[in-house]
Image (cartoon, rainbow, N blue to C red; front, side, top):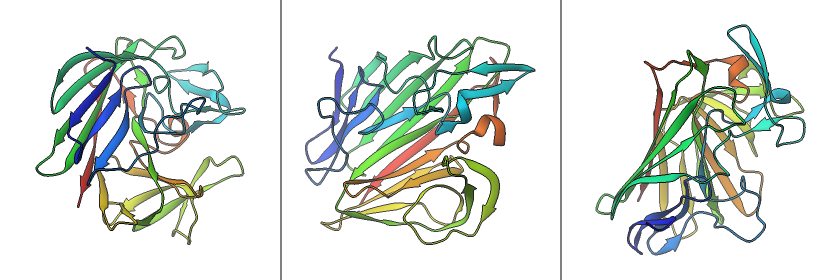
Length: 261
């Protein structure tokens, strides 16, 4: 099997880069590219649509507590840890067809617990949908976990969003836990209470709606070249603010659906 998986076709489909974090490296709608692609030397966090596992966003100082033990993660974003341990590693392809792929990766030595994550991607060209599902499991007694996706949509494009609340963040862009009515953008912020799914509207009037069973959304529209709509199962620094515990009997599973119109 090739490390680059192509699902669907040129008019509608996606590609997955197994060597670079099992990310969507391409999203083709109407024959046009809708995601930022890889360029030589680009940081692994800056392109495609990559899984964030077993944490999403920043972990303050790379430190968290679970079951009475304090853990220190490698800091890969200044003084903080960010976006998990699998976005920059090679994943194994365990199933592949013209419209379906399944990849798996260990959570690795940068994570203090035993576990793995599975990324399943399904394309329906007729309905113009891409469905991504992440399932994270552990071989330890328990561990905290989050999952999410970080799509970089190319500009020119605009956003249609409607959320009831936004987390207040500090100067480190980490939420305090307090929530407010969302102010006008631009944003690099975490939102909850989606009244409708976020939609990216491109210059050719193509619309890509992002649906998810995740209840937290990070919106990052400060760059001039791209914008990000990131469904997450919890907020940044979620191991402190809103911990979710995974056990061998209870994995964490979430889905993101990209719908093109």
